[in-house]
Amino acid sequence: MGKPPNLYAFSDTDELAQALRAFVLDAQHIAFERHNIFRVGVSGGSLPKVLAKALLEKTNGEGKLDFKKWEVFFADERAVPLDHEDSNYRLVKEELLDKIPAELGAPTVYPIDVKYLDDIQEMADQYEQTLVKCFAARDSVRVPMFDLLLLGCGPDGHTCSLFPNSPLLRETEAWVLPISDSPKPPPKRITLSLPVASHGIKIGFVATGGGKKEIMKQIFDTEEGHSLPCGLINTFAQDRVSWFVDYPAVEGVSFPSRRGNL
Ligand SMILES: O=C1O[C@H](COP(=O)(O)O)[C@@H](O)[C@H](O)[C@H]1O
Image 1 (cartoon, rainbow, N blue to C red):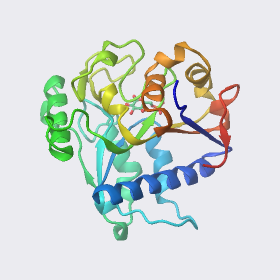
Image 2 (cartoon, rainbow, N blue to C red):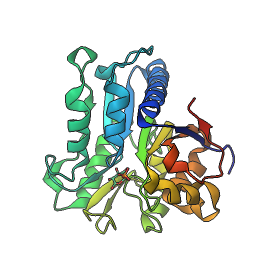
Image 3 (tube, rainbow, N blue to C red):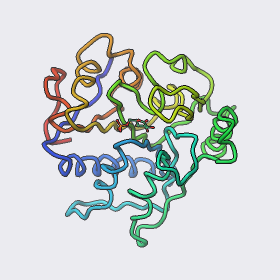
Image 4 (cartoon, helix red, strand yellow):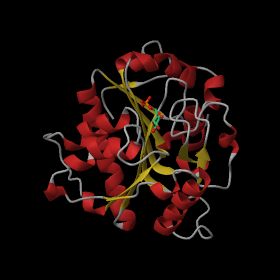
């Protein structure tokens, strides 16, 4: 596998959130040094709640989040209105964005263009154009490099809206892809392609709860797990990937996890 990903396990989500905060602060620091802006791709699902705990709860910890220099993009999004209960934007907004204290500044957020709810190819193309404008022209950058990608892992090993055995996993050119038959509802979505979802300076996965332990065993302990979407990102991005999990999610996993500390 080359350089293996980092697997950090914690006794509860409070501890996990503290470590995730340190990880995000580190990524922010690297990004500010690099280009004084912090480009983050976020997922929906269970991630926004844990992320909000990491970023909003007061800690004694060092480091300041400077949200006004953040640009927030969506690793995947469902083709629904932005206030719909299935919208990843709505989830991230309600869990995190709406709760950021004014003194920390407000990020620039890039939701999908809901004009294209009935044409997901066009929606994906438009979102790709958004990335092109923010990250530099497509001609000069083959694949955009996020400062930080924050991803989830479904119980089937999907991440973003890249599902196991999907032909979308073979895409090498497009940055953003439409999907019309997602096995998990709602069916119509857009997603970062695998090359983009693997192209973060840092990539953080968050997976919690016993419901994830079987898939974690597959991803980390089996050969077949390497071809699951999460496993492919581990393989491509190697030690740029860090997993933040709780003990129930790695019960029975043999791959070495570091307990409690980054
Ligand atoms: O459908 C989705 O699922 C994944 C995983 O969700 P989780 O609830 O198991 O963490 C999520 O990362 C993705 O953004 C979402 O659209």
